[in-house]
Image 1 (cartoon, rainbow, N blue to C red):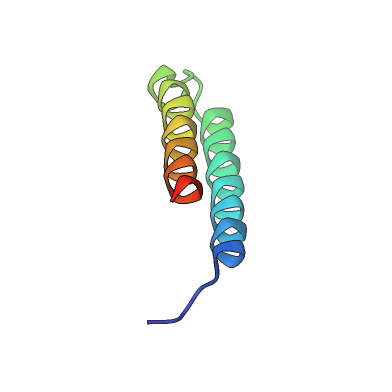
Image 2 (image 1 turned 90 degrees about the vertical axis):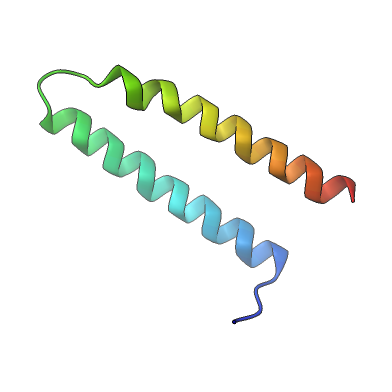
Length: 59
């Protein structure tokens, strides 16, 4: 197990999020029919991330 500081973890999460969003946009461009499910899932995941951040900061 590698010890990761909170700042490092946040940076990694941001980078992963950027990569995921890029991959989603590329998939949408490649697919002729836009996928509404992926668009609906994105805001939910953002809300979940905010909730986890609130929990960690409040403790």
